[in-house]
Length: 189
Image (tube, rainbow, N blue to C red; front, top):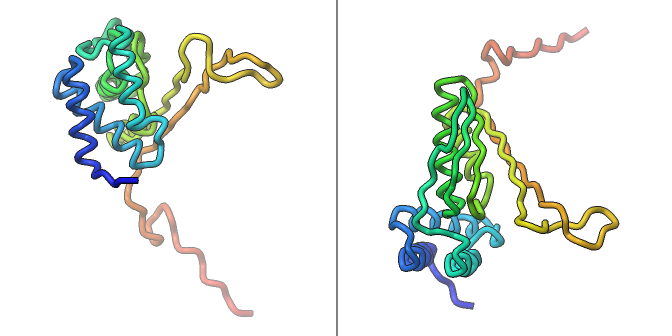
C-alpha cells in the first residue's frame, strides 16, 4: 500500500471541497479535521468521509457554501443554525459562540440545528477546555432511522449518542505546594 503524506491529503481534500462549492477557508478547516481524525486512527471520522460528503453535496443534503448563524439566543444559551452546511464548520462556530457566552455569563450552552456530520467530538472539547472552560458535548449520532438496535431488537432505532468532555488543565503543582503539603516523615519508634 502506498504511503501518502498528510500535507498531500490535506491539499487534495481541500481542493475537492472547493471544487464542490465550499469556501477555501471552510474547505481547509474540514480537510484538516478529516486528516487529523485519520492520523489519530479514527478513520470512520477521517478521510473516508470525503466521498460521503461529496455524495451529500450532489444529493443536495449538504450545502457546502452555507454559513452557520446564531438563530436564537437567550441568556447563556443559543441555537446555531447550520444551514445544512459542513458539520465541522457549524460545530466550531458553536464552540466560539459557547465560549463567548461562557466568558460573558460564566456558562454557555449551545445547540446545533440543520447541520451535517460534525466529526470527532474531542476536537471541540479540547478547544473549549484549552480556553479554560469545562466542556460537555452530546450528539445524537444518527440520522433518521437510527444506527443501533435496542437490546434484543432487530431494527436500528437509536443513535449512538456520543459524548465528550474536557477539563482545563494546568501544569502540575510541586508536591510541596500548599495544596499538596508534604506528608509527615515517618518516625522511628
